[in-house]
Amino acid sequence: MKYLYLLRHAKSSWDYTVADWNRPLSERGIIDAELISQVLKKQKQHPELIVSSNAARAIHTASIFHKTLNLPAACLTIQPELYMCSLRHFKKIIHQLPEDKDHIMLVSHNPLLTQFFNMVIDHGVDNIPTSGLAILKFDIDTWSQVGSIADLVHFEYPKKYK
Image (cartoon, rainbow, N blue to C red; front, side, top):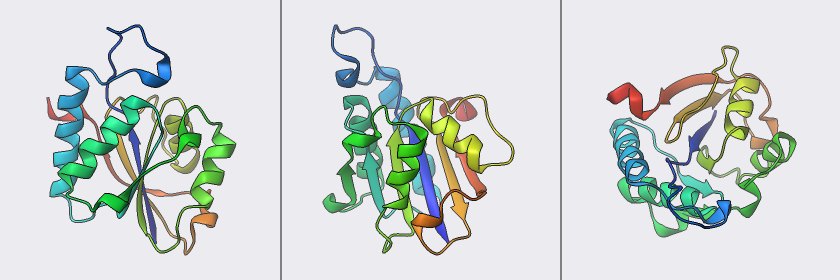
């Protein structure tokens, strides 16, 4: 079994005149990411590795989860290709994930995450909201087999708890 944790970055701030790639999290985004990271912490299974887009808002979101889950430093990596990649390239990134890890979190962006989710889950969603976390279980042996239908283990998002 392989478990893929799809995490959409938390709510970003539009208060600064910076490039999209460099937008920081808003105060609400930080609070929401902390909330969902605590929800994940209470569950029995956690990611062994967090792979984040290199956008500032994604890195900050990934860092909140990394800290809350008390993961070793080496368990957080940055993958620049996760920022604004195509669905086809996203699948390629997944296929190249390390085989010695069965639980991996990808921190990325919409519409990509929602498109991938709807491709592998037989009951789709309109949108994975900011700080939304979908945990997918694939009945496969290697990451290169991802593309088949997955089971939805958990779908967490801030408004579920407010």
